[in-house]
Image (cartoon, rainbow, N blue to C red; front, side, top):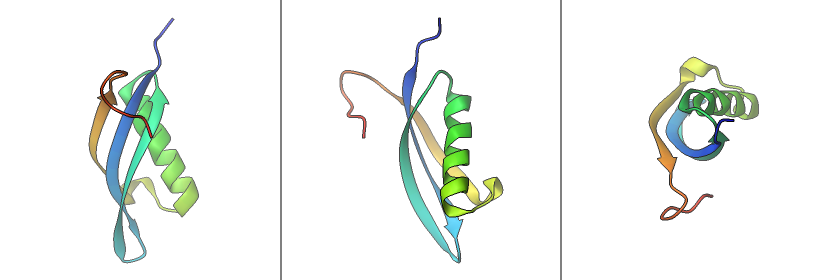
Amino acid sequence: MARVKVYRVTGEFMMGRLMTRFSKDIKAVKESDALDRVYKEIGSRHRVKRRMIQITRVEELTEEGEEVE
């Protein structure tokens, strides 16, 4: 059975003519699953295409030191 991890994905997306920054904490088994979920949520909520979303950083959060938002 695979272990579920928490990933913090940060980036920006084009909203109209402005770049809007975001940071999301996502539960996923793999990093690629977390990225796919972020693309789905941002695209669905803000009506932007995947090509308009730029991911700048993906980091796995540890249970001890970092807080999950």
